[in-house]
Image 1: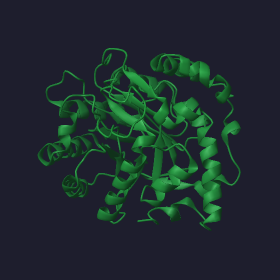
Image 2: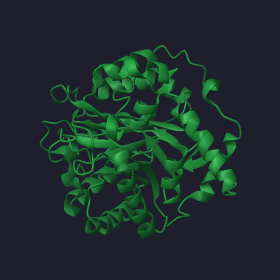
Image 3: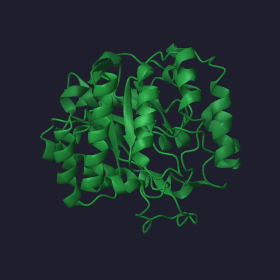
Image 4: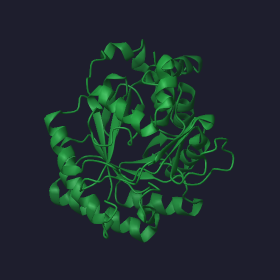
Amino acid sequence: MFSIFKPYIFSLDPEVAHDLAIKSLKFNVLPKNLFSVEKEEILEINLLGEKLPNPIGLAAGFDKSAEVYNSLFKLGYGFVEVGTITPKRQLGNPKPRIFRLEKDEALINRLGFNNHGCEIVSERIKRNLPNGFLGINIGPNKDTKEKEIDYYLCLTRLFPNAGYLTINISSPNTEGLRDFHNQNEFEKLLEGINKIKSAKNIIKPIAIKLSPDISNSEISKIIELIFKYKIDGIIVSNTTDRNRETLLDKQKNEKGGLSGRPLKNLSTDLIKKFYKDTKGKIEIIGVGGVDSGQSAFEKISAGANAVQLYTGMVYKGPGVVKEMKKELISILKKENIKNIREAVGINT
């Protein structure tokens, strides 16, 4: 049905279409078995201490204020990540701030962490407990001077009903956020997070969401600190504010983070580097250009334990996960792989 409605949906402003999708999902009427597939048990994984039905997750950015995560689980996702959530409610940047690059099957966004704030989101999740493995992505408000304090506030408020928490240091749309990739700033942040975890007895897994624009020299420093502070996983990667040279769409030079197919090889190469340099000892969630079973398999075979998508669902609709699961199962059978876990890192 999505292919029938797609021309109408794409005739709408991207943010209007997104708001319409959120409103539709609030009805929560689609039956879960509509999106199940046969032999899905060979896609079972363990991620951040949890057994999941498949390795396909929804990335943060779609359900920004944790309004429809249980409807999203019904679409077949193995896990769902909401946010980015900030301490205070935030309207984000001026509109227009999302752009479809249809010729490139990509998006550019400069949303700026628009969300309802951690108090409202925390109460919302408490009233409607997750029916699956829920990640909560957290970040600082735009006007906060000491950004690390905002991470500590969100962590303290949101951990009780989270399956895991993601520390977002990589959005290109919040000024100064990527400074946390610098060794001193990163260490200060991780040290503070560990103090909060200890003081509040927080035992939930922590993942760090990284930029795709980091240099090779930064990778070893990041890995060193991830091991030192016992971070559970990394998400590779967020959107890029570079890499526009080969794009075809006329909107390619809009300011913001680029996601979708043009990010595919960049993020996969980065996954390989992290997998090799950590010797597979840190869990990796691969993001960027995931829109098919084949693209998911490429990231998993490069070293990702699981994958996430967002732009892929924009272009292929809510049935994309079901099709991806079918294709992944077909690939595993063809490669004579008994479980998707065996495929992690086989092409590195």
